[in-house]
Amino acid sequence: MEQYAAWQALVKAGEATSWQKYYVYFYQAFVDKDRWMQYLNGVLTTLYVTALALLIGVILGVIVAVVRTAHDQQRPGKRSPVLGFFNAILKVYVTVIRGTPMMVQLMIMGFVIFASSRDFALVGALTLGINSGAYTSEIIRGGLMSVDAGQMEAGRSLGLNYTDTMRFIIVPQAIKAILPSLGNEFIVLLKDTSLISVIGGKELIYAARAIVSRTYEALFPYLGTALIYLVLVMLFTWLLGIFERRLRASDLR
Amino acid sequence: MMKKIVAILCAMMLTLTAVSAFAADFTTIEAGKLTMSTSPDFPPFENTDDDGNIIGIEPDLIALICEKLGLEPNWLAMDFDSALLAPQTGKADAVVSGVTVREDRKTQFDFTTSYVSIHQAIVCKEDKDITMDNLGEQTIGVQNGTTGQIYAVDDFGEDNVVAYNTYSVAFLALTNDQVDCIVVDDLVGKAYAATIPGLKVVETTYEAEEFAFGVSKGNTALVEAINEVLEGLIADGTVEEIILKHSMN
Image (cartoon, rainbow over all chains, first blue to last red; front, side, top):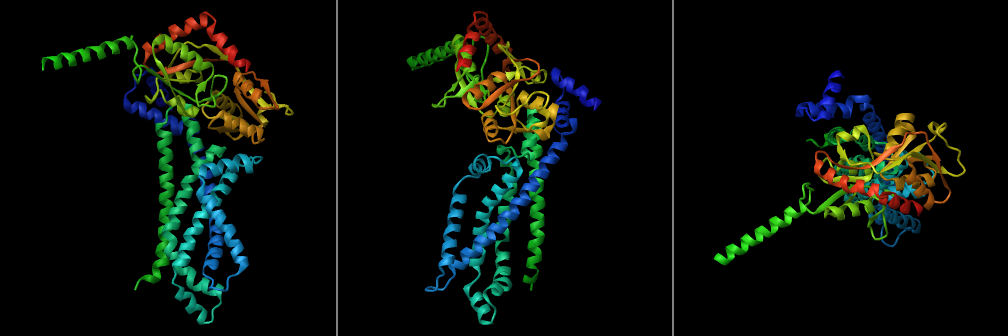
């Protein structure tokens, strides 16, 4: 602390060595005035938003994928109009969400649709979840469609109904196939949470920018933020890896 | 052959004289141009018109200064917190964005002479009763990097303050009732209140602040050159005239 004050005076006077300069920059970016607390709060918001968006995204994605696969895999001549109706709506949802930038969706949700909400993180999580749902649904749909039609026929001919065939035969095979791309989508989602600062969400980059505007020094706050995101993504990847290995256990022969 | 050499020599001499004519005794990152970072969401100091030009008090002042110094103004529009960092990282010669002279900023820039004095003000909806006394109970909107943010966070804590990328977004949030009030420089608050119906400006007790241009650290010659012109403009009343002109509308 005393050393920081002394070296800070040197930096101000322009007489510090580069080691002293970077020490001061580091200290004022993380330690001084307990600024690490701001990053911590930011990370907590980031994780909260990611978790909530992930939940919304997966639920939406599964619903959309199941309806759309069910629609596409009907036997010719026996098409259900109800499924057709929902399929059309969900197709519009996927088209609109995939066809507009994340940032624009956030602005619309934050300042138009939820213009009276003050829970910016929640609005952000909802927007990200709806966005992620569109991408997730296509990934899941791809997985379900990739399972050979013969598997469904075999299941049904053994006396299982549609739901049971899906549950015990199709889904377990599909999950394994989509896990890598699903992991990709989750990582993108985690990093996209940084966008919610534009509507006032106080996540990690919001904290870093606030600190930069106090210290007028961008190096450590931004580098630190990048490092925190990297660590979060690596943790995420590691967890997904474990999950994937466990699913693969039956593949070894 | 001889002719060619003479021609080349002539050309070289021409460019040399051209350069020396410009480089009176200051340097800019791009010769013949004064490159400035700004956050053009700060009327009447700087704003964009419908053609995307940056207009306002400071562009007018800079135009006069550049004319005297034989430079061409070159504006780089960005968010305010980035604009403050631009001179330091060598992207701009100066930040011209209604920058308050602060002790801690003096390590980042060499400030020119200040040309106007302003106060912080509170802007809120007309039906709200917000003063300095109950400001702590409100959600306060500010722009990231401004003195408004520094005061609000220091006095009322991070939880009561929402910092936006630009003041225009902060005022959008105010009209949406997403924040209760905005803390901003009084002239700017008045300019926004004049364009957005139903807003009022309340005075604060924060100390007066001085605006100046923040020139990149160490470019003393440029500061002196700007100061010479700027002080002349202050002395003959041109600065006041320009400020009045823009504050009217």
